Length: 348
Image 1: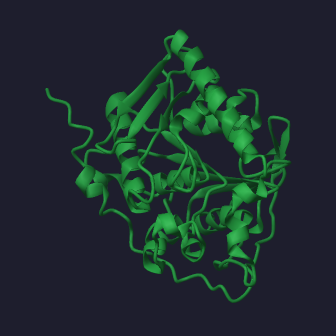
Image 2: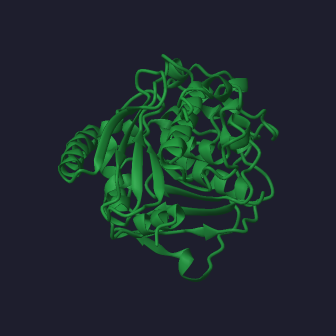
């Protein structure tokens, strides 16, 4: 029996972005922050040695969406490289750590690198098998870089923590803006999920950083039977975003849009906060405590929007971390962040 091509649903993937279901967010006044509700031990956790300072379990109490805060300098708010002067050193360390982990996993026979999961030149998957060697839950990691930069090889070590806890992790690559549109990248990540389903035959937890956090949310909110009737509705039952963006309309007004090439309508179309909420799923939205007010707002916005609409959401700030160091606990199997992700992935 012939197995379906991993590319055969590609054409449909490009037409599955939902029409925005919510009104445009107002930008004439500050967003209202709902009261913080804490419950039991879930209200306070630790990522490595960093405290999750304000985890908010559902239900959330926000009654409306607030737009970006009036009077903010959006260019400054969204320029994380300017906010973190040593960002290049962090990127260089990611490159070294990623190479070291690929070498280690390869030597242990746990790495399958460069699998093509779509026709785009950067559509690849690096698969790192769980260190236990037994049948394992599956997770997909999606890197950031404003949808326009960085390489999946810089993030191989982001699989280390989950691998040690018995979860197999695929690290995805995708084509970059401005060569392709964000809508195309969303479609490419759907192709990656379909490829993994056909290879492993099991659902997956998706987690990602920055632009990858946005894409993780998009995978959670995808109507998978509309992609292919043979796919389970809960192909992605849980996801986690680190410092993701879910309302892309502010980006239309800043310099990054030279590469993203969004107008207001397209920005709304690719913003998961304006999509129908994926009821019955679980979504964690984390952000570095030292990030800008806009990134803090974006992380809270999606947790409140989906939490009010039937998604089990959790919001948290990771103490003493910026937009880039928020990823540090992912390589530590003993961090609470990895413990939580392993639980979302279904690890025992």
